[in-house]
Length: 337
Ligand code: AMP
Ligand code: MN
Ligand code: MN
Image (cartoon, rainbow, N blue to C red):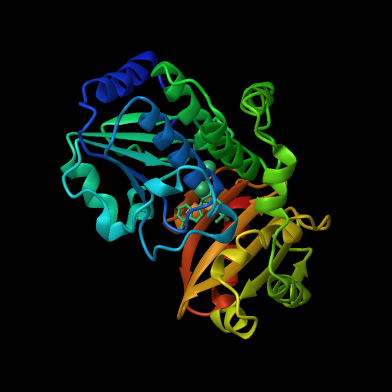
């Protein structure tokens, strides 16, 4: 558990690790499974920065099926992306983005121990402390905040392509500059990114407001079955819903379209805690937990082998959707009573 940002020695070690490389040394960047805007944006923004420094063998990847969610498929730096199977097998340097625990690296976790240096850039309070150089700042709104600081220390100047990647990461992880970690420093970083000439309106339309019609219909159906339990979470209220693989199939939608399903659910005023349970494989569920402030949901997630932040966390659950929700309800009561 890290309570504040990296110390000077850690920054120095990360800078030294990059500076010790030759420009044709192999560098592997990895972000978490089912990548989101911060995972991809911080990784590709940093990868472009390495390219600006002259590094020619930078590859970026993530574990699992090589499917980039539609909203992020046109990010600058996407040319660096390769499927997991094409990741460097023996890189000189590995850098990991937005990954709280090695379990989120799937089959790529072994690359970390294989490389002489592995730099971890992250902002999860639940980060387990893996890697040889740890740039973990639990007060950072996004991993891209950490990535930008490392780029600056490496002498990389922000340009519009790097800035777009870092901006997408920042905008997605702060809920478009709404969440608690939206500090003065976040807005100052956003200002510096926008000063490169990127267009926030255009970027936002592309990543937030370009959804397939079927995704809206699917979301409508899934929201329609939401349940409000005012007595749950020690009387603070819980609202939950679930989506199955069959739901996705019926509406012919990709799994990523449900990544933002938690947003309308967590807006329910009568509940502090919101839960969305999404089937990712038969009997396997990705569980999203949110709190408005009264409950530390990362405790629940960590107890189930997951992780996250105090007010936004997740884990993988097994069985029936109702069983997974039962577990969350019981754990919340245990934590709160
Ligand atoms: P999500 O609900 O998927 O948007 O994730 C919310 C937060 O919880 C993010 O910071 C994730 O990194 C974290 N998280 C979600 N699922 C898991 C998991 N299975 N293991 C560890 N952390 C998770
Ligand atoms: Mn993430
Ligand atoms: Mn993040």
